[in-house]
Amino acid sequence: MTQSTQALDRPVPYLDDLKAGDQLDPLVYEITQDLIHRYGLASLDLNPVHMNPAWCERAQVFGTPKTVQHGMMSMSFMASVVLRSFGPLANILVVDSKFTKPGPVGNTITCRGKVRDIHVLNNGNDYAIINVEATDQEGDIVGISEVHVRLPRRPGAGAV
Amino acid sequence: MSKNTEVFEHLVQTERQRGFSRDFLATWEQCEFWNTVEVGGLRQNPRTFVVQEEDVLAYNKALGETHPLFIDPEYARSHAPHGTVIVHPVFITTIAFWFAQPGDGGSWIRTPGARNPFQHIEIFDPIRVGDRLTQKQETSDRFWRRDKAYITTHSVLTDQNDRKKVEFWGTLILPPTADDVRPFATA
Figure (cartoon, rainbow over the protein chains, first blue to last red):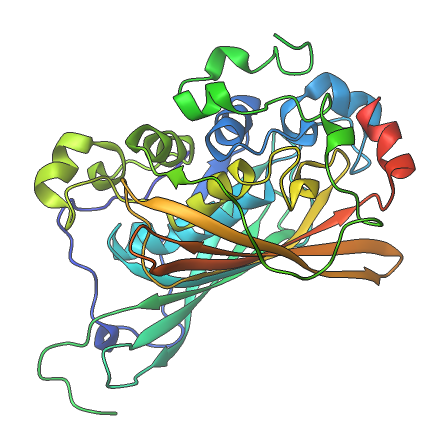
């Protein structure tokens, strides 16, 4: 797994420091069976399509004899793109995800985020929308997410 | 130990994992099915999910998080706003599955052969270690799209102070009947 570096006490960015089109640091994940097993147990999603390689060979739910990663793991990775860039204290309000291609074990998934728009409400509920795309090693999109994150205004920043 | 779960049993580490009904193949007939589930009627699950530190650590570590606010309780005690490790926003997955065990409303999320097309989470107040969460849940929609049977659960999580924490809508594509699930469950 490749991780962006993150200073321990890096503050959550100000909304005013973002602009549409800004790119977040990408995250890369190697989808191993051990990762799937650990995520399955942590999330309690123990469906055999993820957890049981012998069953997958027989059932082939997605037309592959391999186990596939959890959609919720993809959703978590896509949310983590925002948390790694903005810090663990970033106040995520909404995560909306679609899963477009199964992710068999052995895949390499890259998650890339980009600021879509900035919502300046001037009432303490200002937020940004980050679009995150997860692609596999073939460049195919396996998942897309929209992440809404509430961010503070820079002190003294005027109304927009 | 079930032969269906033996391949991952050595990784079980938390009390919640130990007490959870882990064999989704053995219990499939006790769960709801797409064609017979009752749609609508938000109902209170009688159980309470107490957010334990070890649950959160297991989730954060499984994702490969490395920031000490996610994985180091000692660091979090002195640096986190509430003195506890930060809960990942998609940790609601753990909560949703715990509230959807055989016999519970929404237990169709355990269906062998299910696929996950899309999900939506709205967070009103971040979940924290120590929260005592209760859940209202309903199957809110059921529909056909491109010859596939979709089904949506709608859940509302409330904390010990009766504050709404999270609302989420989870959709799956299911084999629509027990007869359609059986080939997967017995494969």
